[in-house]
Image (tube, rainbow, N blue to C red; front, side, top):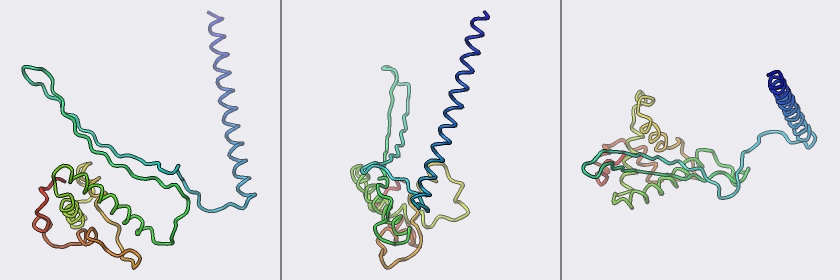
Length: 193
C-alpha cells in the first residue's frame, strides 16, 4: 500500500513540475516574442488571417422523429447551411469605411440566399427583399425579444447604415429602407421567413 501511495505521490510531483516547466516556458516564449516585436519596431494592430480559401460554416439542422404504424419509427430532417469566406490578407485593398465592406458582403450573402430559395421553388428575390423590408421596419422596442432564430435572421437581414459615393444603393438597401406595406409590395413571396 505504501508503494502505491509513494508512486502516486511521485506521479503528482512529476506532473506538477512538468506543468510548472511548461508555464515558465510559455512565459519565456511570450516575452521573447514581445521583445522581438519591439526590436523590429512592430507596433499597432495585429490581424487574424487564415489560409486562402478558408471559410466558416453556419449549419442549422432540425430532426423530427415520429412513431408511425405499422412500420415503426419515421425520421425527417431539414438542414440549411451557409458558408462565409474568412480573411486571408491583413490589408484592406482600398481605404473605404467598414460599412461599405459589410454591406457588400451582405449583398453577396443575399444573392446566395436568393439562389437557395429559387431551387426550392420560391421567388428568392421577392422573399429576400420582403425580409429586408420587414427587418428595416422592426420596432426598436421589439429587438431583444424575439426567438433565437428570429434574432439571428434579424441580424443577418439588417444592413449597416450610411450612404457613400463609392457604394451606390442597390435594391437591397432600398427594400431595407422602405416604409410601405412589405407584404403587399413583395406578395410573390409566401412568407418563408
